[in-house]
Image 1 (cartoon, one colour):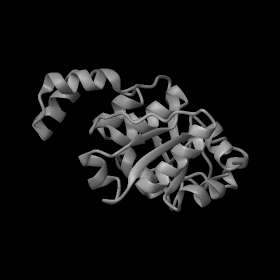
Image 2 (cartoon, one colour):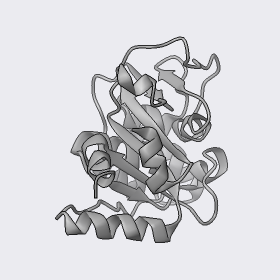
Image 3 (cartoon, helix red, strand yellow):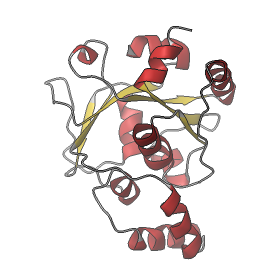
Image 4 (cartoon, rainbow, N blue to C red):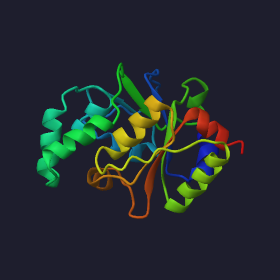
Length: 202
């Protein structure tokens, strides 16, 4: 279905599966990689992330590999000059996942035949997001737009979308705009499989 999704959202769209099997077509990075960086690469090649190669502390917290928020709050506070207490409060509101073993990104239509996507993430222009929100509103579906400028792709979009089964939108964070390839005129949109399937039919 990824090609149908790309027809709606544009070429910077990726199909994502959680805890699925590996195939010969997937690139498994030997070096640690950020989730947003992997999303950007997965627009062109399938990538598999695991506990061994997922390096970003924010992502590791979002997918449940690391459970301690204290050090992360301190690091984000130091790097962005935002009060640590404020960061800690924000982290409490960004979902975390459990029982994640691997994440497969960049599934092709062929791969989707035997690895079922859980969600799609796309980098899109605001006008396209508005059009999608209008279509979803006609189906009585409300999108989530968390107002946090940290853990944008991994937490506010991926974890929120996967855990809560809701279309999720983020304006990005400094790290994802540097490492994740989000252009100045793009925002991040995550859509659960069921909602994406609906969009391809309306």
